[in-house]
Amino acid sequence: AQSVTQLDSQVPVFEEAPVELRCNYSSSVSVYLFWYVQYPNQGLQLLLKYLSGSTLVESINGFEAEFNKSQTSFHLRKPSVHISDTAEYFCAVSDRGMRFGAGTRLTVKP
Amino acid sequence: DGGITQSPKYLFRKEGQNVTLSCEQNLNHDAMYWYRQDPGQGLRLIYYSQIVNDFQKGDIAEGYSVSREKKESFPLTVTSAQKNPTAFYLCASKRGTNNEQFFGPGTRLTVL
Image 1 (tube, chains in turn red, blue):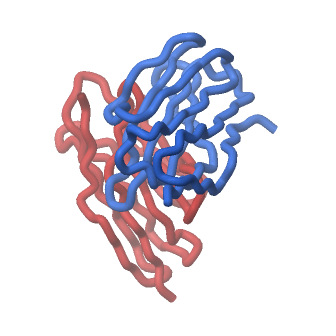
Image 2 (tube, chains in turn red, green):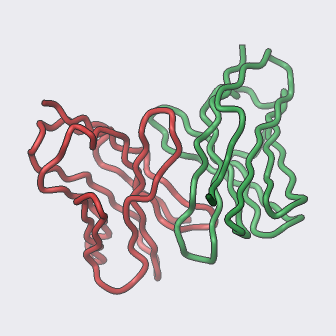
Image 3 (cartoon, chains in turn red, orange):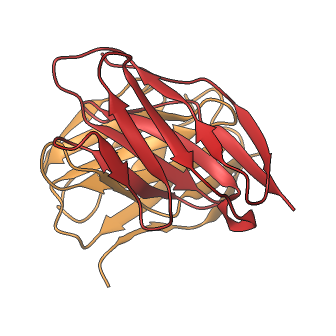
């Protein structure tokens, strides 16, 4: 079974600073990768996904992630964060269900 | 509006009682999933169903049961055999093979 490792459990940053949330996955012949965001006491919302094609994928709110096959990574980045980006972020890989990382709590401070 | 609903949002039960969590979707998705979320552990798959009248155990199925009598519904029963049932439970559904899953708002179960 595939697995996902999120390397940071917590990432505190100041508003308008850049941020990178790291995600590595176990190697597989074909892989489909996702980033989800979760606000407190809510379900998960899809942020972006990589299924095929361009290795750089973007979301509508300024996040982007790059699929790197050689490094088996799918790191999430944003050049300038807002207070409203404070949430928990989950990296996931498609499997019989979906394999999730343990999550990274992003806290944006003013 | 299409989506996934879970009810209730908060649920309290006494130890030793079975409890059933509801999950309904009107997205016409074939596959449905139940996850359990605990702090610092991400989401863990309990059960999943890819078609009506069929379901499979996930990684932590012990102490749980499900049914899939209708495409729209996938209720989860937390039985008294589940040793540590207090958690946040999330239901999801998916269209197709490698697309994303859509999640419900979750049910927070507290066993007293």
